[in-house]
Image (tube, rainbow, N blue to C red; front, side, top):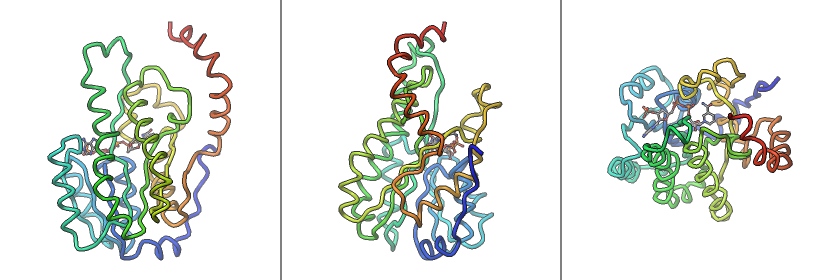
Length: 266
Ligand SMILES: NC(=O)c1ccc[n+]([C@@H]2O[C@H](COP(=O)([O-])OP(=O)(O)OC[C@H]3O[C@@H](n4cnc5c(N)ncnc54)[C@H](OP(=O)(O)O)[C@@H]3O)[C@@H](O)[C@H]2O)c1
């Protein structure tokens, strides 16, 4: 009930994606990996990016229909980002879809973070600076192809920020705000923009958080279908149907939470 099954119009998906070039960052695991498998059944060109090349090569081997290119990069590293951009410039086609999915999450109390400034640097680096720098370079490319940028975001950006996740929350919010800000300009030039606001998804990202193991979570395959549907529907955003209640509560109870929330953390 929380995550109703998606109806995918395969004909529309095939029409939209045949012959197209799709970049998926963070394709070696979780959502990106499942998206690669899902789209891998179509006649398109997938460019899979992540640090773990052996995982990307394994995914490539498993995919029979799509053409798959693998690019190993630590997207926090500016030289790797530049190398990846050169690879894109040297393709003989433009990019039609850019799925900004690579990301990391950190759950840590601020009191355990006092000597860990690097946590904030690395989350900003992968969740914010990497996609901004890449997109700045490929916007002209996406404009030529009337392409689409799909950002894999989180429902947290729609709600009151959670304690313990400050590094993650701030970095995801930063990119979401950047993306909301540039979207009208991009849309005016023919680039589609889509934000996918996800609840918990059962991927390696949430494994370290024990309390998440018993919470309801979407499957990464379900998310792959949501993203695929957004590729032919071109909707501006996906949100779980029930998040509206959370948004309203967040709006009205924000002050109460700010005043009394600390009591729950004692
Ligand atoms: N899981 C959830 O509950 C949830 C909820 C809302 C939103 N999201 C978002 O969904 C996206 C995908 O997360 P996931 O749940 O699928 O997690 P995941 O299984 O941990 O996958 C993360 C992916 O990002 C890649 N990545 C991380 N750091 C990278 C770096 N420095 N350079 C290049 N690639 C890097 C990883 O590849 P390598 O390690 O091989 O580099 C991996 O392929 C993230 O943006 C996350 O914020 C997840």
